[in-house]
View 1 (cartoon, helix red, strand yellow):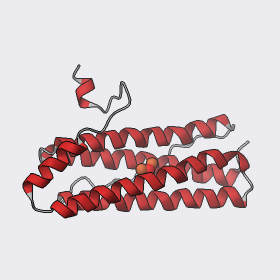
View 2: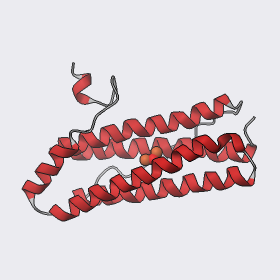
View 3: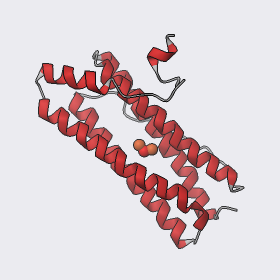
Length: 176
Ligand code: FEO
């Protein structure tokens, strides 16, 4: 049975992961609206990954006999003044999520909830990767700044991100 304090923060984490899903979906809509479909594609793939994250916590709680409580999602940002601002928000958001995973790990350790160690170790590693990726893309966006051909090339590169097969987030798969 999952520890009660950990259950509470893990239910909150489902909300944060779903808010991440929503944020990246909003960013996908923003990038589509300015015809940067490669960046939109990257954000759609990121949103897909966030739904998987939410479901990992969802299933962990179920497997351990806990009660799922789906909380209200906060209204997130729905527009950005620039491409740079969107990528800055991406990195900032991932740093926020890393802090939440650290907080979860602290609760699990304090409560001696050893069964949650594998899933929390997975997310600790995942956050290193997510921050590194967001930081690298932000650096590249800053590098090309107002250079339109640089943005165009970066957009094409980000459009090559691979979706898991059958993802409903993949516009090209949905069109088939
Ligand atoms: Fe689920 Fe991007 O952290």
